[in-house]
Image (cartoon, rainbow, N blue to C red; front, side):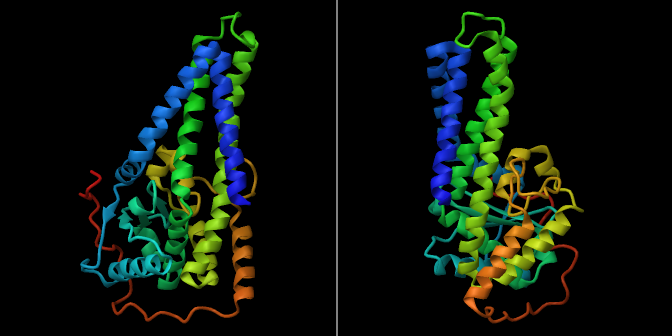
Amino acid sequence: MNHLKTFVLLAALTALFVGLGYLIGGTTGMLIALVFAGGMNLFSYWNADKIVLRMYRAVPVDESHPEPLIRNYVADIVQMSADAGLPRPQIAIIPTEQPNAFATGRNPENAAVCATEGLLRALTREEIRGVMAHELAHVKNRDTLTMTVTATVAGAISALANFGLFFGGGDRDRPGGMIGTIAMALLAPMAAALVQMAISRGREYEADRVGAEIAGDPQALASALQKIEGWSKRIENPTAEHNPASAQLFIINPLSGQGADNLFSTHPNTANRVTALMELAGRRGGRRPALAATPVAPRAPSTGVPTTPRGPWG
């Protein structure tokens, strides 16, 4: 059902973009808009993951990391990827205090999963596994590509609407006239944002379900979601605040807390997600056996990741 809804919503975005281009410039405007959108989508398909990783200063890590905490983080992702039938993704850490995580990449063969330093310090190993399994579920479902394309088209709609409002509002011969152009310029970005947000919410529910199956512990993911939401309301993510279009990538909205599961929220209500996961746990019966504790002293204030990272993404 989520895949059908996503297809319908993406079709609505495309139709909105075409309609806006037609109102602004007639048939010629529609064709120009389509070419422009196609170029943006093509660029996003090949480069969006690199752009996001560079923007968040993601630092790649592997089994050779000096900290046992990081080695466990890597080992668990590698093991869960294999269990899910996925290629090994690029594994990275984001140097920010807000507990959160996201996945990016155009397909499973070119995917990357990232957790913040704050997440690795705030959660238990089981909870971290649950979070990263959720991100692997996004990779498995190819959600990252869908959300990238959606964000690109929605952004193009907003830009095109603004262009029509400021540079074409006086052309009365245009289809729809001046009033139609102004109306579309005001409503199109809002409609595009609603569609983008609706797609994001549906895919978070599905990733919760699939991620719980990958990790084998729905309760750990439910607990992690509650902790992340609590911390995200108290700790700012500066990069996300400056690039709000990327908020949909994270497991919990890194921006201001969105309470209700409504059209203006990029993520589902956390309480609803927790309820669904606990119901899933009840149907499964029992929890996954606890993992061995990390053989180190209590977590230090830093994971050892440099604050000015140097990696393949700049």
